Length: 89
Image 1 (cartoon, rainbow, N blue to C red):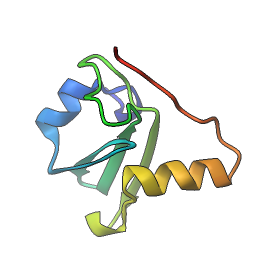
Image 2: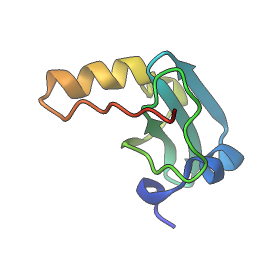
Image 3: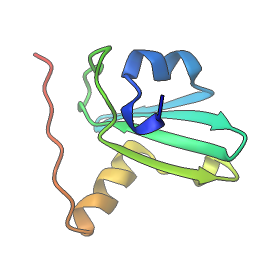
């Protein structure tokens, strides 16, 4: 399965790290190419288990080079990308 189609629950099981803030979750994965971040923008709520990522970043050599959900959301908005607003309630 490609990372850009990976459900949240499956990504969490494979994660080497998860960054959570009030904008969403960045699930950090590692493979032979480097580190990847899968971004799930559900604000402070936990994404549904079957949710697919809204955005993906990588590969990068160091996990520290990946953006937090807030930083990625700001980057996307500054570059004219759609504002992801999801609510699981």
